[in-house]
Image (cartoon, rainbow, N blue to C red; front, side, top):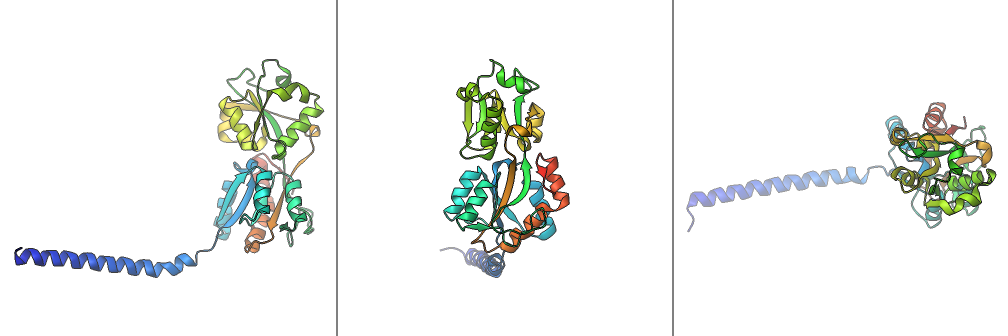
Length: 282
């Protein structure tokens, strides 16, 4: 049989643990309503070319409005399919106008109440928030440390990364540019096709391709600027890459989506887009 002092010590320790457990349970119970009342984030589906661009803008948006946003970056076509299938997004920022227009025509997205760059509101059309630029990018330690159009006709070029033209607007622009240059048939066997523009840049960066037709937003990132150079293709070689936005019709956070679009279309943030490689619309 244990001494009385040991039993008392054990009972005292048990009482302390029990008391601490009760306090912890009470604290958790008290915070549950606060957790339950936490506002849902603004859920944004964004084209892959925006991955280097949006994070600082979203941070400033949250600081200014208190609205937290979560973003999924993929090819515009993939995001369009997800939204068609009911994915719980509030806002879609596409790399073109065609995919968001398709969602409007299907009745699953709109731009009701959103003022476009011309100051008008048209719920049947996506809102253009920027225009993209296509560039040819190569590594500084490659055969072409400073790329040019001549890079595309150099026999040493064996692998050219492009985004899937059926899924990514920049891939479609790449095909149009090569067609205009009368180089498509020559270069098509050399294509290394990526699912989106971010993966296209990755292929060129890692050496899985000798060069890449990528977005200026990708080429201007700190990392790609440090290890490579780019050549801006004449914008007359391909149709304008107008990037459009729509609000998902089923969204319960339309006010937040409106606020973000107003924020994105404001002059200071249009200039921020310009610094990141997009052409502003205002």
